[in-house]
Length: 111
Image (cartoon, rainbow, N blue to C red; front, top):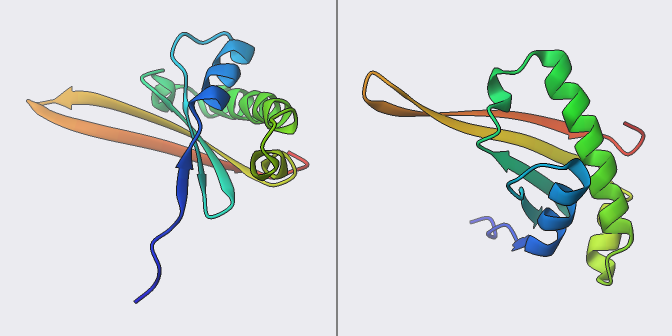
């Protein structure tokens, strides 16, 4: 049996990323097995064009790296030097059913 993944959530990082991107709702910021995952909900981003999604993801990763690099916790500062996952998660109702859509991009360090 494989061990459960270690997942830590950091609201302060999500709040700082939201301020840096000028979005109203803070994204979830989680550290899962050493990888930083930033998830934006209810932006409607799943329906954006691919170019818009990529532009926002690259901007979000750059802002997240800057926030992480200044964080007092060494574990989070290390996240600034690794790939960052940017995800969009939106839910809609279709024919009375809730449908969740997710888009995810792993932005490499030099991305």
